[in-house]
Image (cartoon, rainbow, N blue to C red):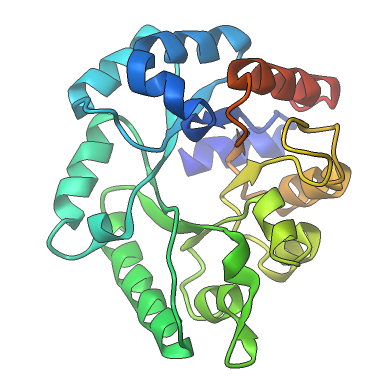
Length: 257
């Protein structure tokens, strides 16, 4: 898949756009098939799971196929990539056609805590490579706070292999006091997938109605040539389906769809 997407980029084709299903978390709990159908109707090409709502991998595979969607990632808890769970995680994701194993949340009180996590991810990256998969970490605001004089984000990504995915979240990065454009430059080639989330204009604002420098973010992702998915996320629970539709339409106006 990586080669295909890089070939597309070289040919000037657009980076595909997916949706992080946390955006529709309450609706997915009660009607996952209906939400996948709605997401596909809007025009999204893929979805990133944030939980499976009691569904088996086979069920999810069928739901995706029924709606012409691709799995562009799973937010899988840290415990699922530990040695005793990793093979099960690989098999589940192989069934649903997913190659991106993204851990959505970690904490650490000391530099050594983050170095230990970096070692784990380096080990996992080597193990999942044979399955055609990659492992990565998703940004939250606390990751950009300093521990013993250095940002946790830098301790972690400064000590992980290049293939460990840096899933930057534009809003969370800003909330942590960092600049997503600067982070993309600092870790060029690591943003295999990226979360597009509005910031700075209230919880109901969507992409294009906010203060993120989208032009610069897109320019870096596209010029670096490694970003395989743009993944929209909208956190407010008020009218979320309308919000993700507005987000998609905004990307269309920006020429990203």
